[in-house]
Image (tube, rainbow, N blue to C red; front, side, top):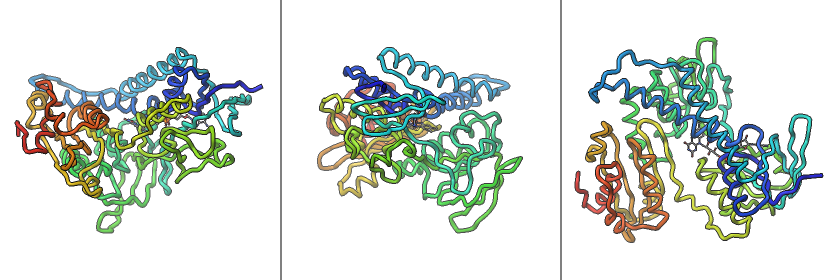
Length: 464
Ligand SMILES: Cc1cc2nc3c(=O)[nH]c(=O)nc-3n(C[C@H](O)[C@H](O)[C@H](O)COP(=O)(O)OP(=O)(O)OC[C@H]3O[C@@H](n4cnc5c(N)ncnc54)[C@H](O)[C@@H]3O)c2cc1C
């Protein structure tokens, strides 16, 4: 006999486990199926362990620059095994936390590989055993995995995916990072700060290509100044590992192909959704380039089958997955949630310096036909930034000149990943320039730059 539930969720990443908790809060009988570790990629192999590593490289950077703060730190060094161990322990702590949350919320956790066998039916393989589950509704939250290069598979020795890059047993001496999205730039920043000689190759004309052009240009300068070699409009045509390294065939802007040997390479060229072999084809669930097609509530074209998170497409972010999970569950429970508004999802890159943004870039806003008022305020004009020794960066705001609507905000510099939420709230509340200008910002804080940027858009900046 199958165990029956109101809702079964396939996959326990930030999409799945958050949806399970909300479902339990709404009185649904809910089970979650997981083949690996509760918490999914985000807290086991993604967002969280990378931030633990980046915290180490940040502190290491400060230690090496202790003198500029009047401090002495001699014989600064590191123990790679301990760095990785700390990152794994942080991930382990959060994994245990999710286990606790499942228990507290009376969510049944079913370990094993799940497949949707029919509408309302799932089977879960647990070694030799198979468990059958039935549910009125099923949410697919199976996430995504790293995309391989067509001509070179990650071997974990010389060619790494993010998983290998997160648990190095040796420090790369000369590292090639393939792809300059958030994941590639974060690893480049970590390894560069830890002393590796880092090169990034990017096919597109600029790094962090989804960000505002001025942010990309600033990051290009900042990372180059730190010693990272950035090769844009550059293709990778081959990657041959050997016992001592990996030789890359690189096609430059001018079409010239050259070879260079690195100690290691990280492939960071995007992800592939986990939609195969989970029963979706047989049910006729529609996909688009592998991603499950959903409406603003997470409904697929098949009644009773929902999908959330990375498996449904960009942006591939944990908070997007969680928010989609909440919306889907509230709809399932008969509520009236707002549909997902992708224009209000912040995106962050936790490199040094950090990058954060929400809404339209200046170029996208122009393309959409808006007449714009654009404000920009540099970190050098902010007392707190100077006091912190972090005077590098800027805050840019883009307004609709006609209505004063904040169309987008783009930041680069220290702690901007914490600041961005102020603008996300502003956009959610449909705030205009007038309210932002009238808001009092605490002094001295980095957030004052958010005020100044708005003022700058209207020619009223005080400190620059
Ligand atoms: C290196 C790295 C850094 C990142 N940093 C950030 C960041 O800073 N901020 C951010 O927002 N995002 C970040 N991300 C992205 C983030 O991790 C994902 O967007 C997020 O995890 C997606 O959540 P999800 O619930 O959709 O899927 P996932 O977290 O991928 O979870 C899916 C789960 O489903 C399970 N599963 C799959 N198939 C089955 C099956 N058949 N049966 C049972 N279980 C199954 C998997 O084992 C997995 O645990 C990062 C990703 C990487 C790789």
